[in-house]
Amino acid sequence: MNKVILLKKRPEGKPSLNDFEFTEEEEPKAKDGEILLKTKYVSVDPYLRGRMRDEKSYIPPFEVGKPLESGIIAEVIESNNKNFQKGDFVNGMLQWKQFQTSNGNGLNKVDGEKAPLKAYLGILGLTGITAYLGLKKIGKLEKGETLLVSGAAGAVGSVVGQIGKIKGCRVVGIAGSEEKIDRIQEKFGFDAAINYKTADNMKKAIAETCPDGVDVYFDNVGGEILDAALMNMNKYGRVINCGAISTYNDTERPTGPRVETTLIKNSILMQGFTVRDFVKDFGPAQKRLAQWMEEDKLTYMETVVEGFENIPQAFIDLFDGKNKGKMIVVV
Image (cartoon, rainbow, N blue to C red; front, side, top):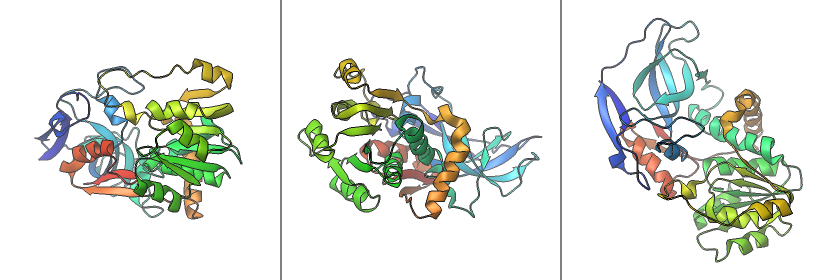
């Protein structure tokens, strides 16, 4: 039998295991033009929380009673499709199932000889591509500028900071523990860091660590940290709104300072960013990231959880900051 994970009900606040349902179905067979896939590695990411809400967004919401999906590396174990062979590994948005069929649309082959397969869910996948394209398309980062990154110890934030150093910038990270502060400075090369949980005044803390102001702010958290960052932006500063994990589990729409005057006064660009807006740029971005890895200019961390049955808990653990870098489940 084929194990499947469904969305049982829409969460109120932080997700719990009660919001998921495990079920079984017959193992599928590949029809003409299809391939049979066996799930190997599953990516769990904070943005999936938004898809649990029944509201319009840049990607359709999950349906109650239907399987969830995320980025997955799968092995082709049977092929009736001329474009794929048995033994190929593919990457794509796939359902939380042990086995599933596909016609191959939206799937990309990945080469485990060039890099570990898990890397294609992280630094060589949407994680790294998000960091690279966010800085390139919106941040337009220039040598000598100051780059501020929230969620700096996370999968995307840690890559953002490293790219900033490659570009010759001063990089300051924001994270939520002393262990994470040490990590982003010692492992990822950030110039300075702020523990938002111990800082009495975030506006002042950012000003002290960014004495020349902030030119580019890569925002993964939103909320009060975004408010404080905006008050430290330089003239013509750029804010990349990539994520807002601090508000994902709110049951009411949060309010904050009005930003119009700040944006106008300093001619600040603040733009929402989803990496799927730039699909045509994925290939060149991945190539550049791979080149930097070969040159030992980029490194990464993963938190690996074992077991298909642990996918929901791994996802929930993201909201407690239990991951070091990319969270991946090995099936």
